[in-house]
Length: 182
Image (tube, rainbow, N blue to C red; front, side, top):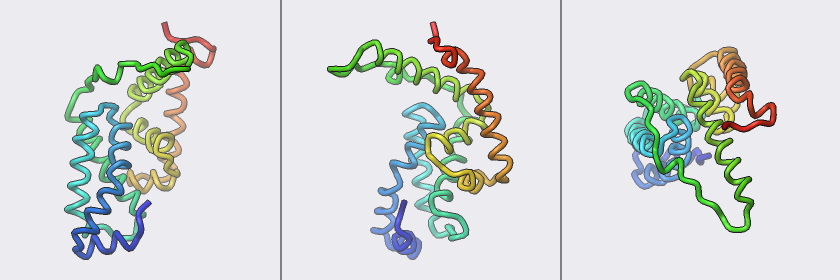
């Protein structure tokens, strides 16, 4: 993800290296925040807060953990705190559908509904299950990276993912039968 030399330079006080480092990780930080919070504005706020925290705490990063899991832990903790402090809101922008030329409109509508239903199902998961699902399936973290990021035992991560998949299967039951929501 990021060159170790850049991390070392940022830790040693090289301001340009730190700015370059933050620019390299900002998209990853935002994407994680968005997947967890499912709201653009909240994700922007959380990612900004995470980048500031990374900026101020880069000196405390130790190479015991991978840099990406260290960042992930910061972002995830900020998102969890933000989620606990606020009630979920719905952005009107998230529900606008834009149709592209030369595509089947019916497929676009069904895909948009499916995506909306999947996101809705993920949102209904308990916080700890939602977080591991986002890290595993949307951020492509390994089980060990999730365990490191969330400071959880590996078996707990596996258990959370197993239970989350069961809950999602139940919540998305209509799709398994070939139906769509009505």
